[in-house]
Amino acid sequence: MSGDRGCLRWVLAVPLVILHLIAAFFCYTALTIEPSGSWDDDARAGIVLACVLTLGASALAGLITAMPSVRRVMGPWWLAPPLVLGAVAAVRWGVLGA
Image 1 (cartoon, rainbow, N blue to C red):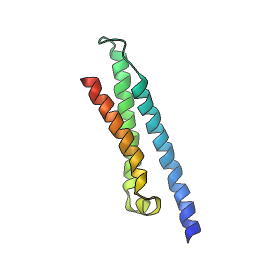
Image 2: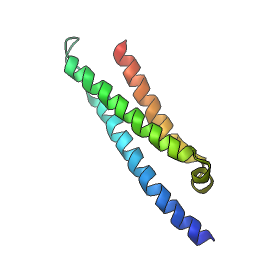
Image 3: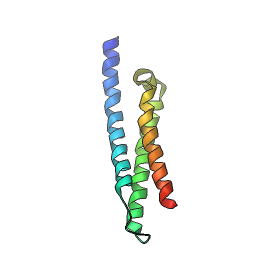
């Protein structure tokens, strides 16, 4: 029985890790883009796009992890990366508007 659970963990972990890496890449992109000035609308649009993509990938990973069957096998700590990345992206997007 434990061998099956180990295999199932790998099957579930691989797509979740890929989604976390995608969200982390877009979050990093959102944090590293700096507008040259208040007139730089292209940089601001890039930041918003990166934040939206981070939130989307984080939401998808969070929804997958929140499913009861996945939570039973993977554990609740897998919810931490999408929550943290989503919060960072939301704060970056909010600070951009300020």
